[in-house]
Structures are given as C-alpha cells and as structure tokens.
Length: 246
Ligand code: FPP
Image (tube, rainbow, N blue to C red; front, side, top):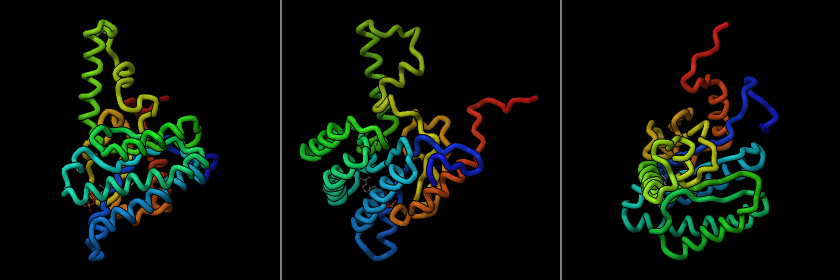
C-alpha cells in the first residue's frame, strides 16, 4: 500500500509509534533464552523499518527499544541489549544512508557505555541530511523523565529571564522535549498483549489512537502493521471537538 492509495478514503498516519513488547515471552514459549527473543525482535524491527521507509513511505516511525525501567533488568540481559543495539545501529547505518533514513534517538543516552554513545552520535550525524523516513529509537527513555527534564530547562530559562512564566504555552513547552520537531504520533501500536502505554511519549500521546495486539513482537509482520493502519483509518478523530452539525 503506498501513501497515494487510500483505504476507506482515509489518510495514512504520518507518525506511528511502536511499543515492541513480547520478545521474552516469545523466546520462553520456544524454550529459548530471552536474548534469542531480542535477537528475533531486532530482525523484526529491521524489516518494519525497511517496509515503513520504503513501500509505505511513512514520514515518521518511533520505536521503543529500551525504557528507563528496562535498565533495571538483570545485568546480563541489559548488557546483551546494549551490545545488540550497538551492533544493530552500526550494521544498519549504511542502509539508512542509502535509503534516506534519518536516524534519531530520544532518551538519556549518557548512561550508556562510551562505545554505544559514539555509535549513536555517528549514526545521527551521518544521516542528519536525509529527508526520508525519520526513525526515532527510544533508548533509556521515560515519558515522565522527559517531562521533568523539559520542566528543568523551562525553569532555567525563567530564571535567566528568557521565558515569561505568564506566557508559557504548549508550543514553548514542547520545544524542550527530546524531539520537538517530530509531530505527535497519530497511531501507537503495542504488541505482546498488554494494554497500557508504560511511560512512553506521555506528552505526545494526548490524542493518539491506540492499537493493541496479542502478537508477540518477533511475530509482528508488515501485514499486521498494515492491519493496524487500516484499523486506524476507521477511527473518527475529533480531538475533543464534536462533529459539525448541519
Ligand atoms: C520488550 O520485550 C522488548 C525489549 C525490552 C527490547 C526491545 C528491543 C528490540 C526489539 C531489539 C532492538 C531493536 C531496535 C529497534 C534497535 P520484553 O523483554 O519486555 O518481553 P516480555 O514482556 O515478553 O518479557
């Protein structure tokens, strides 16, 4: 389905965010170690990025790869995820450059080993001029943490006299979030059967349509991604306003 094709005459979403849940359970169901689930999950992320940026021509895709809370998992699993992320970003960079993907990270990366920070910064710098899919990967990310970080920055501006607190509005506040130029997601997909947002994009999800599926992330195909988009296209989005009465 290309962006020029329309299902139900409704537009495709411009920004889709995904909570990639269920890697561990996918592996456990196959008597495999949890890390095998993450490895398969990374393959699935790779396919979805290629599909979103290619055939679907989606402008923005955000993937929740590591939450601030995941950071407290057993050290062996966190170490594996860090290594997997480092390898993933380094291995995909050439393809991102060739396929015009702009790579971004949201979250506090200062806690990561220097090598992963370098890989991330190099990938961001190498794709900064790209104009295709904007791929944001959330790493050590928490929505509440992002809002508090923005509050601290706003507070510093107020103290410096560069923001008038009486005039603080949503547009100004948003400019202190991790990626202020990325529009709010229109659709969020969570795989793995849980129906919650788990501290993801709390500010940005105010009017986002939610799509939950039982499918574990390593089994989430491009076909099911399209099903989620078709479902989104059936939603009536009113943003708190009633439909016009004639
Ligand atoms: C949730 O599954 C998934 C994660 C914590 C890690 C997500 C990471 C990847 C998919 C690989 C890297 C991806 C990119 C984009 C670089 P879980 O372990 O919470 O599963 P469970 O709920 O079944 O235990």
